[in-house]
Length: 239
Ligand SMILES: Nc1ncnc2c1ncn2[C@@H]1O[C@H](COP(=O)(O)OP(=O)(O)O)[C@@H](O)[C@H]1O
Ligand SMILES: [Mg+2]
Image 1 (cartoon, rainbow, N blue to C red):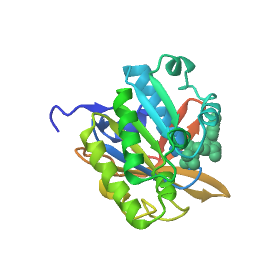
Image 2 (cartoon, rainbow, N blue to C red):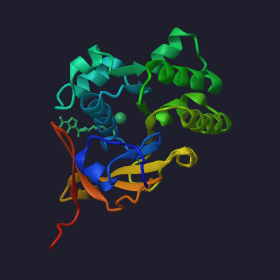
Image 3 (tube, rainbow, N blue to C red):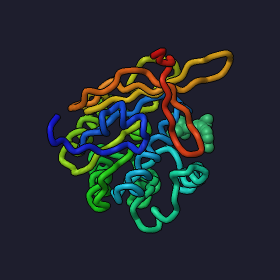
């Protein structure tokens, strides 16, 4: 596409697969089961954006406390305390925030308004929601969950940010989502998975969809290194 601004993911090989990056403003569903690397990949996306492009990034967590998240991230080369101190990266545990503003039980409007105002007030260009499954689990009924997902998609569409929202799917399935509707609000879908080779789990990444981009559809091997995510072809090219 001509003149389309893209947001680099910060993972060199992933940017190459995306012919540059994620089109600005897209909402991307990052799906995978436990341990596939969703949290680390999305943290790298925020930290690289802040460090390389001075873009404000916000990480909205529903599953882990802020201290725990930072503790797990500290060993990675992309992590810099300074980016948190400068306010370029913000990490929020919204279950705690919800408690603070007495938003329990969580209502669809309550949680949507909270997310929307957090994004607006922070001026974030990059947003990660980890995870949408975590929010849905607190909502209870299927009707409320569907209402929440569609409302979230609409609100994100109004906002000036590029979003990665995480879906925690059961292991060894080809599902993109738990509630079956998350992918409908997504402009892009990236799947993380794994397979077993000689008793070892090998992680994989595949881009299923990315609006506006003629992207690679090849499944890649994904390695988590101390310097962040590295992708490699599954099959060695012979020529
Ligand atoms: N420093 C590291 N080097 C290599 N692998 C790591 C490192 N830190 C964590 N991991 C791997 O990352 C996995 C967790 O990734 P994470 O992004 O939290 O998964 P998910 O969010 O999909 O559940 C761990 O199970 C571990 O195998
Ligand atoms: Mg995670």
